[in-house]
Length: 238
Image 1 (tube, rainbow, N blue to C red):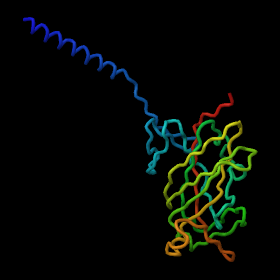
Image 2 (image 1 turned 120 degrees about the horizontal axis):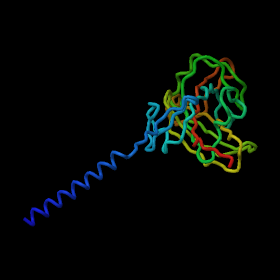
Image 3 (image 1 turned 135 degrees about the horizontal axis):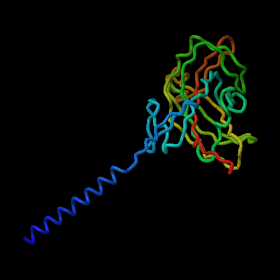
């Protein structure tokens, strides 16, 4: 009889324990951090990271980072080394607020390469704007770009290197955000290379990336470059 009493008591304790666990699980709130910001076209990743826009990469790692995807596709021409191609300080479309470039903790960038047929390329620090060839846009498959982040008033900043296959978003690179400013940061494209010459040389001379061929006569080679950037969206002047 005593054994039966002990068994009944143990069964009762087990039932109470399971009941308590069930109540805690039932009352626990589960938060889905995957959201889309319609005003920026950007997306934020969940608390465990994830591919929120279907492009195959992890967009964020903490549920608070927004990738801004509303910058236009830049039409880039050669030559492609150590030159200014685009700056948020001077080439920012009127519909985009410089406040998107504010941050106090995190700034990441990635690129998406594409092919350009026709149109006019952006001028760079060594060559004026030029018409794009309609016949050479298919001669590359991957791109490498150097992107610089600097404070307003500084002439230089940190430079990261990012890559992308054509029509595909590349992996993001993060800057060490320089402190001591209440102004929006300035983002600049300072170098663009492709594998065009690599393909021409059979890989023996220019691989894996080289400057974009430049035609000094008629229309020249052009490539498309879309810059996407992310901040922690928590800038504060306090």
